[in-house]
Picture 1 (cartoon, rainbow over the protein chains, first blue to last red):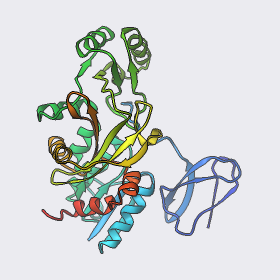
Picture 2: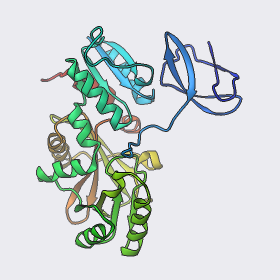
Picture 3: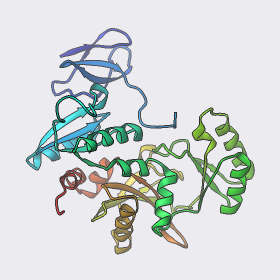
Picture 4: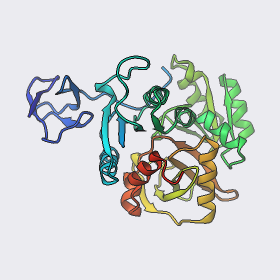
Length: 56
Length: 280
């Protein structure tokens, strides 16, 4: 299974037991990507910094 | 029973929870928040009777816990507990009300107010954002000059939260602090986080070592959990020379992979059993 890196467009291999919310690194550009699911297919987007609620 | 795992990022802890749910003979229902939405008052019913809230940001953890509990799902932790533990000021207030030893703390609303607060507490002091975790943006001020610099930086940030200065006594730690795990019913386990640097979050490089269990520690963990409204919690405790165990912070969505590894305790299993309400 593969998905496209949103940063450089190259294909990224997805593990067979991939799950939404996993972090992967694009082998071509090295970006940290988060797996997410849309209508049953796994897609990739850049992983944003999570967690801190700075009260915005 | 269907048990939902409500999460943002699939870390080691989340994988352990899924395995623990299966091992206990139940059906895990992973719910990746960023790939889904939660209907509050329409659409079909939610596909689980119990939900373990693992969202890393307090805001998303609280939003998902509120929504699911209003749909009749049994959530851990409860929305109020997530909100309390997600706000250091509210946590300190609840602990103080319950007579639980916690560092001398004050809240100020201006630079001058904060300088006066620090005088009343006594240097060194720590300035913390009211929310936020992993020990980030926590600054140590040895004296008024350092505190003034820290505060001027904070006041330059255009967010109302940065006009609220949470000033806390700096507890000198013997090169370590304690991260304990427990609920309003039971003490589960605890580790020492050993670090030369005064910020002892293992996410910031501290080393985890099993802690000496003691009657005093177990009692403090249970009382602390009750003070914040109950729940399955990760509690940060410092060992103060004069006062002994002092509770610094309580985490409602707690990391535990290092603690589970070094103590051998199945913390994920304890969490799922607690979520199921076993022993109630």
